[in-house]
Structures are given as C-alpha cells and as structure tokens.
Image (cartoon, rainbow, N blue to C red; front, side):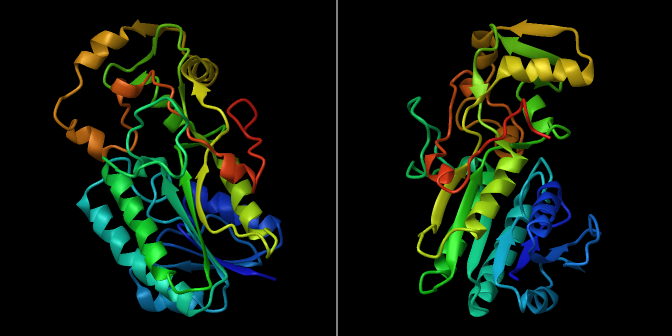
Length: 311
C-alpha cells in the first residue's frame, strides 16, 4: 500500500484530497497547523507548522509520495497576501522537496496557479508553454515554488508534477464564482450586457480526479511536468448569476457599462489590491473570455465536473 504525505490537509482542498486518497485505499500521513478535519484508521495526522523541520521531516519517513497543497489560497493563505506569506512559502518549499528527494519519493505533486502566466495577448487558450510573468504576489509565490521543485529534482529519479489550477469551487463553496459577478463595495450582483462572457475555474473534484489519475499512471508513461488542471470550458457570467439567484435568493441584477468601469482602472501597473487580493476581479479583461487549455491534463483524467453537476 502506498503511503502519501499531504500538506495543508486541514484546508478545503486538503481534506477533499485526503478523503479521496483514503477512499481509494491509500494510507495517508497528513499535516497542517490546524486540527484534523476528520479521523480515519488509515490516516496519521500531524498537527504542526511546516516550519517545524524536525517534526515534518520525521513524519515524512516511510512515505513515497508528497502532495504539497499548503501555502495556497482556499487552503491556507488568506485572500489578501503580503510579503509574510511569500517568505513563509519560500522557507518551507525548498526543504520539503529536498527531504522528499532524499527519502527517494516516487512522486511530488505541487499545487500551483494560473496566475503564474503572463496576461495573454490573444484569445487563444493558454497552454503550459505560454510565457510566465506573474503580476500578483500569489502568482510570484507559486512560480517560486515551481522553480524550487524543478531545482530539487534536477538530478533525481523522483517525478515532479505541477498542477496549475484556476479558482476552485464546489456546490457549497462558490466565493470564487461570486467574486466575478458581485461588487462587494456596492453589495450588488452585476453583469455586462447579457453576461455572455466566461471565466476559467477548477471544480475541486476535477482536481482530486486528476491527482488520482497521476497516482495510477502506468510506469511506462512519462507524466512529469506542467499541467493546466482546469475545467474544460469557461463558466459564463450569466450562469454564475443564475446560480447565485438560486442559492442566495437574489432578485435584482445590475446592468453595468463595461466601458465606464474600464475607465476607472488605475494606470501604470495596477492597484495594490490587484496585486495582493487573490479574488480581485480585473475589469480590463472581464469580457476577454480567457481560457486555459487542459488537453495535456485530459490524458490523465476525464474532467467530467462542471458547475451544473458538481457536488
């Protein structure tokens, strides 16, 4: 039985990943600085901060796979980031990856973000080969994590997988969906035109399915590398609004002018909020229908989940 070490295990993403692993018959060693999300006979839980190198390194012994979910938004970090989170992530990433490599782990899976990409100049789907130029603190944090993993595995037999995800959602967790159509200052839902523009998201269960797909890949398949782990199609703004109407009993939707809102955007590099707030809605690209190509990831998993059928 494979034993898998999971960081950030008490968060929403981490607990779902642990539940999936246990349901598939894996043994799990999970860690977080928060109490365990649940108990299971095949899960050993270590409540510790990732900066506690002695306890974490000791807990990693006997495992053969690292799934590094900590230091991510919607799992550990707050919506608004500062240099503190950047320093924290940098401090733990290098030793985690080096420890896993020294213990001859078979796989390391790292959760990253679409925010590592440069802003697309065309409407072509963004592929893994697209230029990297993060403009947000979170994007910079995760790109540094990716590079730390690549550096640790340069001369290693351990296989590294980087999962670049878009904002996560489930049936119960839809704050990331809401942030695209809700003005938190005016406390209103809004649309441009008929809402026929979309955003890329990642259903949590597409992510857990992908992780299971990596773990069950045949040995002869070279699955090392980057993957856009995102829903196959963008979610339309009008569909998000309909979902909010059902779940939040919203009856009024404001029609707003895209041109007028766009004029209000700060010039010369954007606002501090744009760089620090994970859920910042960039109006300048709101109607651009930017999508992320998941063709490579679909070779591993089916990506069957979307907003209309998620649980």
